[in-house]
Length: 339
Picture 1 (cartoon, rainbow, N blue to C red):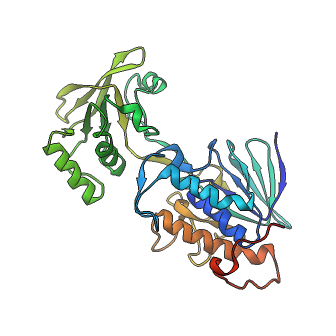
Picture 2 (picture 1 turned 180 degrees about the vertical axis):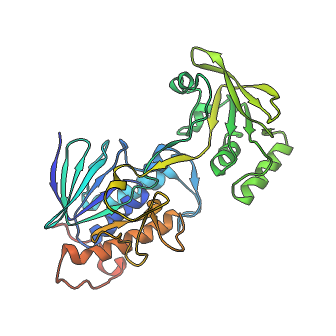
Picture 3 (picture 1 turned 30 degrees about the vertical axis):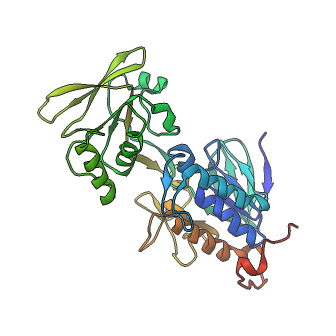
């Protein structure tokens, strides 16, 4: 059922940074509503790589993306955020009291401030231009993410791409797959140097097969059941690699979607913000996480967490005009008592 909601802060995006913004707003006694186009919280962490380990979260030498999201949901839970999932914000209009948002599900959210934590915006995989691709996507023979490593146990897996995702998953799946083949057009990879070194070592040991310099050429199989992946050199030399799965990791195509129509200053599909407050050129609208840009910006989850805190503190005077905000550490004040 469409909802009519009044809240202090509307948070667009339920990824890790959006979830932490719920906590930061809650610590300042501000009510929140979270809207996300996906059917579950977590953003790319849940949709694209739930089992992938993350190594740069403070106090967690290693944590799976899905576990990080679970912990952030638990942290936000005391503040009872209203989660409006499986819908996206189509319109934002200014009102006397702040803003009114309209969603694709017919919801209306009246709020005093907006935090855009939309990650990569409306994202989708860059799909290789292969004949018959749709049939193999439908059966799962071609996938653009790994949600369960166990799906690939004892299977023949071809991974295409030269970035972090391709290399990381090649190193991870070699532990359980019958065979992993990496297809790349050159012998240099756009990934962390340590990962590239591990890939080279695994190839030398025969744990991973390298198809270089090759690029995807075609798919073989019947009824959407993949049998082999055809690869070709720039000279047109073609060979078939027996395969049960093809994982093309060519990155994501990013589109701002309706956000691009809201009068925000945009630079290369990112929203420009003041780094001190994460406020956009529209007063009361803030952007945090991957979608936000400013000089010196690092696309790290931990930087997004910091931006969530800065945005929440900058918004507080809008929600509680005239009320002094005395900064206190959470160890001193604990969690606010629910009103």
